Length: 193
Image (cartoon, rainbow, N blue to C red; front, side):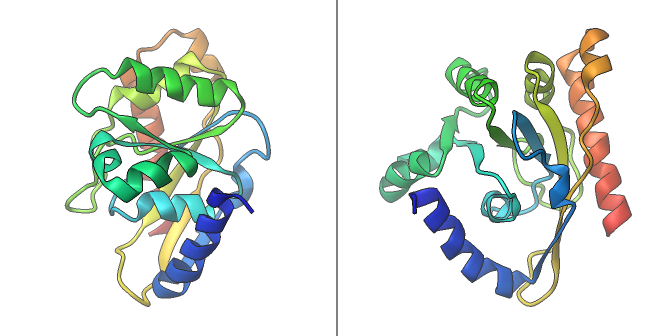
């Protein structure tokens, strides 16, 4: 058992009973090929929750600051997380993300860039749209519907893939592409509240 599988097992054992995690639409994540998994961001626990509910290994972009914590800088790369500098264009992180998708893996993103203090969906950053347009990845929206309260149900909803074939041909901007993704997340939240 590799570290990712082991961590997934341990985190599942801890989080699933505490937050009564209910997963909907797991079958919407293609079994193979590149997937850009885009979720809203309401809590620091969102990455592990997406990680344990996705049927596939998810590679996450994580803020650079957490890689400075001694134990985390050793563990994070081994569980497929890589650093991104916030507030600027980080070319290395962009290259890393595109490489992950080109290799047919799943890239998990929180397009809002930071967690929402209110729980309301915020405006998405252009990065999600950039990856959606620059790769052949299948775009799967995800909604985490909380709040995170012990022994109250937390829903993780994976929506049907967003069709980006036409949008890629139309040469829309990264900002417009992100808006399409954010709207699909918003619809999932509204339908499953």
